[in-house]
Image 1 (cartoon, rainbow, N blue to C red):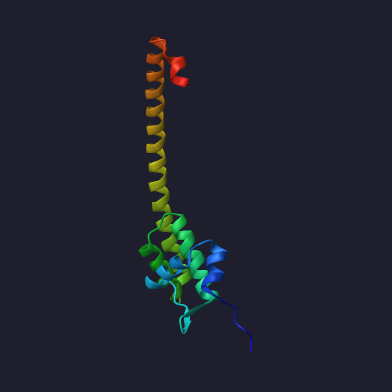
Image 2 (cartoon, one colour; image 1 turned 90 degrees about the vertical axis):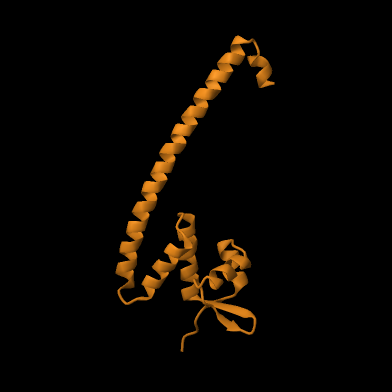
Length: 134
């Protein structure tokens, strides 16, 4: 009989640099389901894998609802194929959103640079450019 590797809330908190409160939050949302021994939470390899997916999804900007859908699909028999297709579609949507945001940020940055050049030019005309740098 092989022994299954388990993790405490502290183990996962340290490994993933998250708070125990974050783990409890994901548990409350039904994303993780550790075994309970009294008040102690015992996470297994499955929970650890799910946590890695949750954190990756959050880092990429996906909602908990989207992450929950992927995790649920993973549990189905054809989950890996369905999950991959769903993830690909969601990733493409996220990429479009991020590219639009980047374009908007680039435009805003250019507007700010132009404004700064204008103000610097005006200050220079007033003979105040050197004072502004002080």
